[in-house]
Structure formats: structure tokens, C-alpha cells
Image (tube, rainbow, N blue to C red):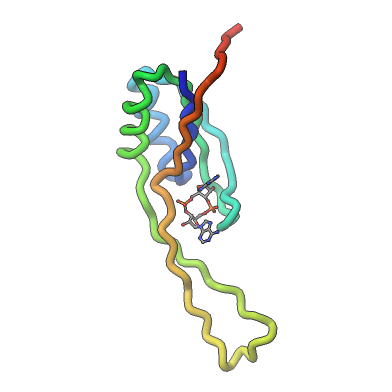
Length: 109
Ligand code: 2BA
């Protein structure tokens, strides 16, 4: 068995959960925060048999889209502000960051 952990954009999480449950897969959603942007994102856990992993990855790929974000750099205190025009930095975020982990044991009580 594998645990598939997908960090996705919040706006994609509903569609992903719907697709996973429609495919008969079990999923858990938690609200998370990205360490770099400090923005809310969503993390979806799916416990699945090995032969279902590719199907899960395909659903993640289909439902999670890449987005462009612009980050405004902070003006350094050492720079006189009239000479320093900060340029927004472009970042490609997502569609999904996925980890596939071996599950040593799984129980339901
Ligand atoms: P954040 O940490 O908020 O990162 C958002 C986006 O900022 C990243 O998109 C990437 O484009 C950029 N970024 C992140 N760290 C950077 C750095 N040190 N220097 C320059 N740019 C940086 P994604 O790579 O698509 O990541 C989206 C979210 O997935 C991340 O949000 C984080 O929550 C998670 N993530 C990505 N890689 C991870 C990893 N290796 N371990 C744990 N979580 C990860």
C-alpha cells in the first residue's frame, strides 16, 4: 500500500476530492500553509493499493492546475526608496507537489 500526499492549490481541492471519491478512492483533505509564500494551500492524503497509484496521480494531474503568482520584493532598508523600484518576481506555483510513500501497516478499527 502507498500513501500519496498531494499539496495543491485550495481552489483545486474540491474538484480533486470529487474526482477521487467518484473513482472509489478514499481521501482526506487538510488545510495547510506553504512555507515560502505563507499562503493557504491544501494537502490531500490518499491511501491506495499499489495498483491504484497511477490512477491517483492521473487524477491529481487532471484536476490541479499551475498558476502564476507575482511576489513583490520587500524594499531593503539600506536602499533610498526614490532610487529603488522593486520588480515583482514571477513564480510558477503548483499544479501539485506529490509524495508517494510506502505504508508499512494500515488498520481500521
Ligand atoms: P510555498 O512554500 O508557499 O511555495 C510556493 C511557490 O514558491 C513554489 O511552488 C515555488 O514556485 C516557489 N518557491 C518555494 N520555495 C522557494 C524558494 N526557496 N526559492 C524560490 N522559490 C520558491 P511549488 O513548488 O509548486 O510549491 C507549492 C507548495 O507545495 C509550496 O508552497 C509548499 O507548501 C509545497 N511544497 C513544495 N515543495 C515541497 C517540499 N519539497 N516539501 C514540502 N512541501 C513542499
